[in-house]
Amino acid sequence: MKEFQTIAFIGLGNMGLPMATNLVKAGYTVYGVDTNSEAEKKFSQDGGKIGVPTELLAKQVDIVMTSLPTPQIVEKVYLGDGGIVENADSALTIIDFSTISPQLNEKIYAITKEKGIDYLGAPVSGSVSGAVNGTLTIMVGGDKKVYEQALPLLRVLGDNPFHLGESVGVGTVIKLLNNLMIGFYTQAVAEAVALGEQMGVKADTIYDVLSVSFGQSRIY
Image 1 (cartoon, rainbow, N blue to C red):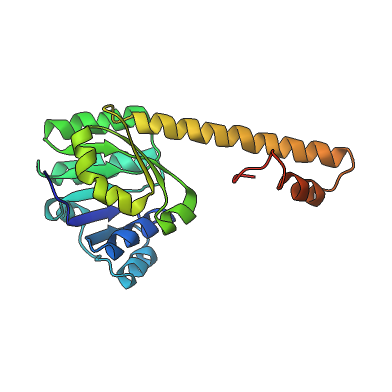
Image 2 (cartoon, rainbow, N blue to C red; image 1 turned 135 degrees about the vertical axis):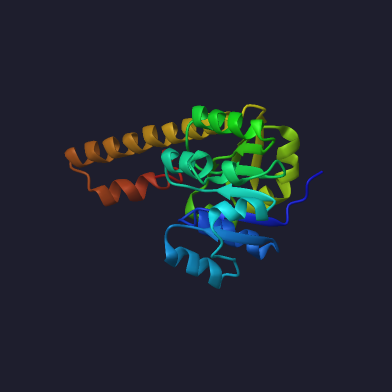
C-alpha cells in the first residue's frame, strides 16, 4: 500500500493555500505552486517549499494535488505541453479538488490510466473557513483502493471525506448538485427579501426575524 510523504500542491488560492498549509502542519513535505508569487511567499512563511517548476515536481513527489479556479486551467496543468501527466511516471497519484465537469474528470482519468498514474476527482465543499479549519466535505470518485491510500491526507483536509463510487466524475456530479441547490436558495432569499421590502418591511427586520426562524440556513 502506498504511503504519501511528499506532496505537490498546485493552486494556492483562497482554498488551496489553507489546505496546503494544513498538510504542512500535519508533518508532510509540501511543495506549493501558484502563478501568484505573493501566495507562494505566504506558503513559504508557513513552512511550505516553493521554487520547483511544475514539470520537475511531477518526478519528485508521491502525490500531486490541485485546487484551481477553472476547468481550462485544470486541463492545461495536467494535460498541456509540459504538464503533470507528460512529466510524471507511473508511481504518481493525482487528486484534483477543483470544481470542473464529470467529462473532464473522465478525460484526465483516461489519459492518466494509460501511463499507470492513479487519479481521483475530489471536489470540496465548506468554503474558505472549512479549508482553514480542516473541516471540508470531500466528494471523491475513483478507485477505492487509491481513495483508501489517500485517506490519511484527506482527513487532514476535511472532517467529511466520502468515497462515492468508482467513476472519477461522481464527486463532481454531487458537487454541482450542491451548487445548484445553493443557487436556488440564494435566488429564493433574494426574492423573499425584495418582496418583503415592497410590502413595507425593512430588510434588516426581515433578516433579524428569519435568521432565528425555520427559513434560515448557513447560506442565509
